[in-house]
Image (cartoon, rainbow, N blue to C red):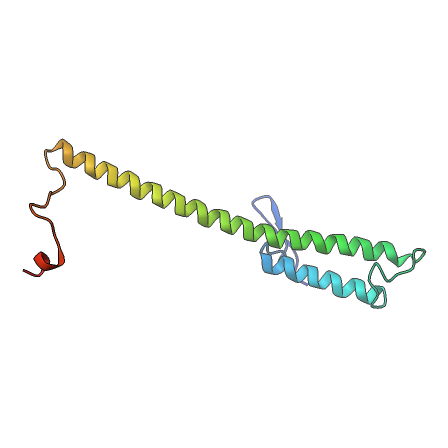
Length: 124
């Protein structure tokens, strides 16, 4: 196993990569190991007096925590996308208003067609 390195005052372990994929993989590994330690039995299947019941419960909570982080990555990605979209729409709108105001300041306004454009007059 590679050693952890320290850079900029933070410990960086080579196997800790904060992505939803690693969080999901960690949840899968927790399940695999706790089922191995309990003989393939889940928390509900273990007897109340079984000392491995606490292990199964802790593993279940840890898995739920990992799955919560997977969902939070999705929510953050959605918020980033929606925020980016709102920013660009606002910027586009502001630029359009500024261009219209600039045109009015220098005496130009939007061209007004002299006649109504229809399919018949467009081809003529």
